Length: 300
Image (cartoon, rainbow, N blue to C red; front, side, top):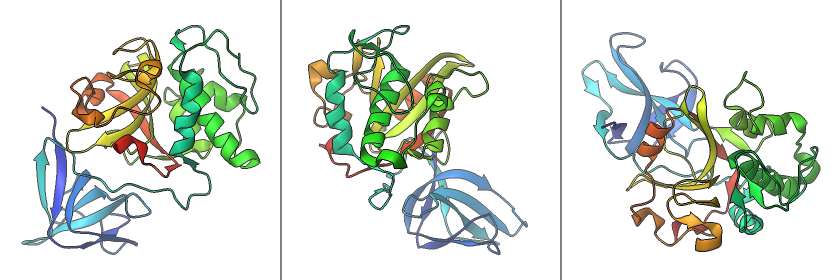
């Protein structure tokens, strides 16, 4: 079974931009358990070891810390089955952000949608691009994610948010030059920040592009939340599998059956997938963290 690599810090350590204390400082990492993204042993000299940690309280999201100098150790690196609890970015002061409340409100337009991989219609027009409008109320994974996010960000920010046919084609993965183009479009349009790696547990409201094979059986979906203690992920998607025929929460049901917001204590349900299962199902994947603020609903 795969495990997470974790650094246990008994005391606060200074972070650095690179695995070298002579490089630019990157704030402080507080005592506690932190997810390890990368390790550098005996670097840059045999006297020191470094680890790159995910520290979302810092502006840079990740930073390097010195874990050993000669015989003195500043952190213990261990492997464990659960990811450590991660501090959440609030995006409260982010100019180009949308509220979680707005996203849940917009989900109401997808209540009656059914999944159709080849026929897709949008509940509303999108800026800068002509899209087919419902009825019929049919969509697929790509059109659902594009329709929800572009509507939310364009209404919240008007001319400050730009969308066009190039971005639309990215959401549809219309080119073989970029098989993760929905992720690329979210970053380039300003809707999201790149995650430190494809393997770190998703942040609340993460956009994921996954492939079961290279490059077959692709899927675009949203991770609304990750519950660190159980490793469960609240997946929001348009699909014809995992208990869905349309838009809903994976393993829990369609929006028309369970409602717009997820069931209370969704992480206790056996049908909800773990992050580890998602990673093994989509071995080729990338993720970005959407700029969503005022998050409250997913942790009821």
